[in-house]
Image (cartoon, rainbow, N blue to C red):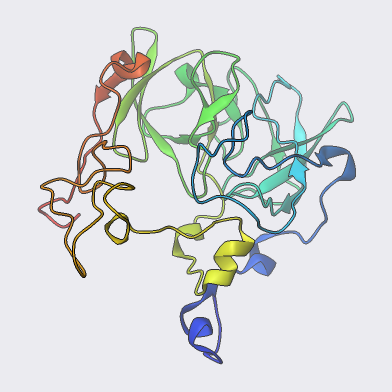
Length: 283
């Protein structure tokens, strides 16, 4: 992490990732980036469906390969780059057939390293193979939910899942949330964990830095009127007046309350639910 001298009150607590030590310093490859429309949390009708989004510094989109379907074609890591659209870093891969692609960079990958995607290959960080061929106890990321469907899970900075068992065509993964989940063993996963594991230590320090990232202010429910939020109303500063916290739409939220959809399609794949709330042993 990089710290600053406290020249201003906001600088005192501000921290950033020291990118000079982690990235190769190259610009994004022109053929693998392009413009895109940032929806600012709005749907096709222009209505806000995700609050607290908007503004921010203009970005280019990097076309990251999450399918990684270059089977049995070795590739060399050319660069490790920053991507403004995700928390982890990305790596530019030059494959033996001459094609270039961006992939999500694992923690231990270095420029010049060779990576491989195959049904079965060496258990080395950056390589990708079927879950059935990955030994128990190995850390994985970029995991598919359906075979050949592209990576959908465990893609944010510093995250990884642990392979804990193989059983009846499924592989059991212990997720970053502590949930144990079944995934079809024919799905592919990358060995290792996502890069930029210091991301969770970043302190923005000031409101302006948050706005540059496209994050708009959040207003407390207790500061609203009762017509606008279940926590609103009251003379002066009030507590929420409710036993359990609620969202703006009256759904339970925060403080260890379960918010998962009761009949979600993936419930049958969950072996053990994630731990919710504070642990008594302070873990």
